[in-house]
Length: 390
Image (tube, rainbow, N blue to C red; front, side):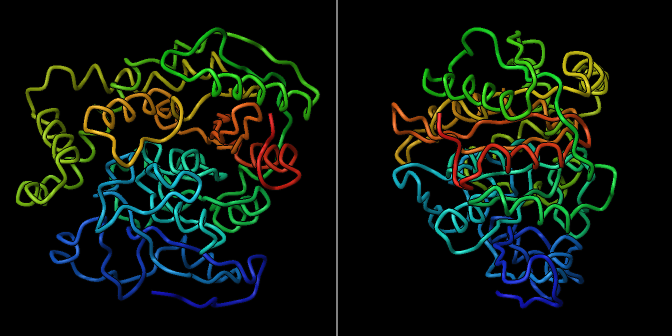
């Protein structure tokens, strides 16, 4: 399905690949699975995010695949053949915004409109050599978008160039609160080795932090980020997310889980168990989640940003087995959970590591509603609009 622009504007001539869980009037979204399409009716309205892009001069080149129910980070569990990663054809694209990422990386669309709950914009961006942006929670309207876990769901953008991100977010942002960029006072980078992270990626993270500090004329602080990047935080997020997934879709999942991929079904089963009324951990998890953002604010105050991996290395091979895919997901969760739990924006910058020839995605975690500060940073760092060379 393609859609023409409905008006002229700053996005004249820009083409968009839309994740097929973002509503288009008269179309029944797949939500990553043909079973969903056959059990649901067509959308009654076009999501405001899509309508805003069309009104600003963009056109929709097509609707793109996603992982089942948007409940995966791999890019392997959607309809039909998994989308192709143009940067690493032997590897998956990352998920769940696998289709928009594949389309943008292949030059089939200028920007990808997707969603990010646990990393579904950030992981595909890092996997496919793209710029990716997860906005502050609530900055972009999620009306008309199928929910996964509403407390964490955001609509985000993928692009091949830094210059595409800012105009798109200007159109999509529903509030002026985040539009005034500010300079960072301190750039925090991880001190010491990050567990499970490849040496080349660690070098890329450190070099990116230095490049940001040079561009902004501010200092670099090496500090332990383990208080907010660790397996306990990642699992806290997974538990809270799982309960919201079951709350949103438990009725449908009860009668349709047998149609899901094995790994998605396993997460659904855990979500059901976690959602039982007698779950003793529920209240503790809610308190820990509510207290997480203030603790992160204390560690990373308003004038600072943190530079960190998005994944532990490259995306998994298309031949990877279940254990390898599970390990990849767990490793990525460790780094994507902070922005999701705290509702903060995160920019993904493609970084070309010269000595290895590899391209990694490096995450830049901003402060709440510091969205346009991060976007200004992207254009400062990547003047060639392709990637940061380190």
